[in-house]
Amino acid sequence: MPELPEVETTARLVRPGVEGRRVRAVEVEWLRTLGGSSEPAFRAAVVGTRIAAVHRRAKFVCLDLERRGCPAGGLLVHLRMTGRLVVTAPREPVPEWRKVSLQLDRGALHFLDVRKFGRFTFHADPEAALAHLGPEPLGPEFTEEALWAGLRSRRRALKPLLLDQSFVAGLGNIYVDEALHRAGLHPLRSSASVRRASAEALHQAIRSILAAAIEREGSSFDTFYRTPEGKPGEYQHLFQVYGRGGQPCRTCGSTIQRLVVGQRGTHVCPRCQPRPRGAALAGRRP
Ligand SMILES: [Zn+2]
Image 1: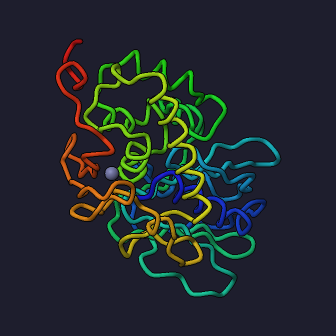
Image 2: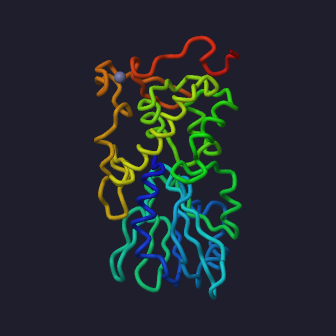
Image 3: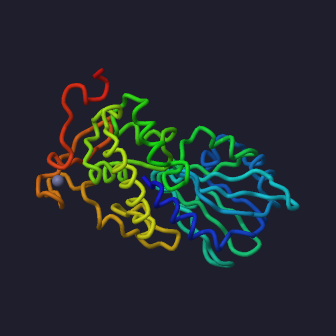
């Protein structure tokens, strides 16, 4: 599933083709993609607006809309499993698996989705729709102090806590496994047991791994995630643990193990990430 680096890459690459463009028409092929809105209501909200800005928040691509220079709500795009955004030039054919298209005053923006779990929804107040999300891991609010305080105040296993979008936004299975490995922390360890130095290492790992993954346009390890230009990302070549069960750890040579934590396939190095005992396990009081 696309995570922060893949969604950031998507937002950056569609931006030049759609920012400042006006929406002339809307085509809907799979109604559920609109997330409960009717097609006429969606059309009425979006047609005639100008796309003022394209940005990312957590795992959403956000398109801010304007009408006659005034804010007019926004579109939130969640790629889920197999969603993609693609911009086409005028008279270019509609790409395969298209679910929704915005016809612009030049070219078009298409939402493609093989498995149809993705969403392309209109919100009169997009900020309110995103208010439940925690801080951006690359933003100014996500400091070492804030992460340390957040870990201390909870008694949850690290992996599910870091996947919780209200704790920190944009991380998913891949980048949590990679960050915990780099910080030397086991995914089942209780957040409250993490020492200050390890919290700092985790903060540093999250930020540097996300930045490196954005630089490489995300990770593609199956046929689904492609950039809007149709290219695979490159970060999968740098995975240390994710998807490497049974292979040697690149740091210490131990065999990477695959566990299930909170129903998610999880990859750990048994030597770099020692398994917690007793009080250090989530859910047990020290
Ligand atoms: Zn190792």
